[in-house]
Length: 235
Image (cartoon, rainbow, N blue to C red):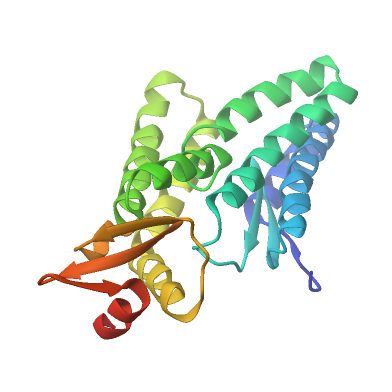
């Protein structure tokens, strides 16, 4: 990890100011400790998998750890990194159980496990969808599911602060969708410049039918071309 890796989002600072000003100091400290312990779970697993961590951002509703890693890494790594945060949060609650801790833990855990980008529920869902569907299709499908939840959640539960969080996430999702083309091309470039030892093999004819965690052969005009050579020709 480099210097100044930990960042406070401006909204986190504003939230902290209002909590302290309005006398919610104990609530704010407890909430922050739960978030930090949650992120420690992600960070520990990232260290084990040797993911280069760029920054850890504290948001008013959770934390976000950003890594400079490959898209084509094993799906099991994505799953374990995503699930370890909630597990660490539950460990924290087990040892520091109190009415205040529980009142924060359950809503935070449930919200974090919703399939909304960039939360853990989204990342876990993304792993299972990538095992079932091609990578290009999954990029669109996960975004669609995330947006649906963001649109319909205010009809299920409405609170002004909660609505602001959903609005923040909505714009974050739009930014992610605009980045879709970059992610797709990065996925393809990695297949050209890196050698991956995938156990699964598929024969396909359309580049958009490529799966994460699978090596492909392309069938064109009765000729079978291996993935790396085919992509180098297409590039």
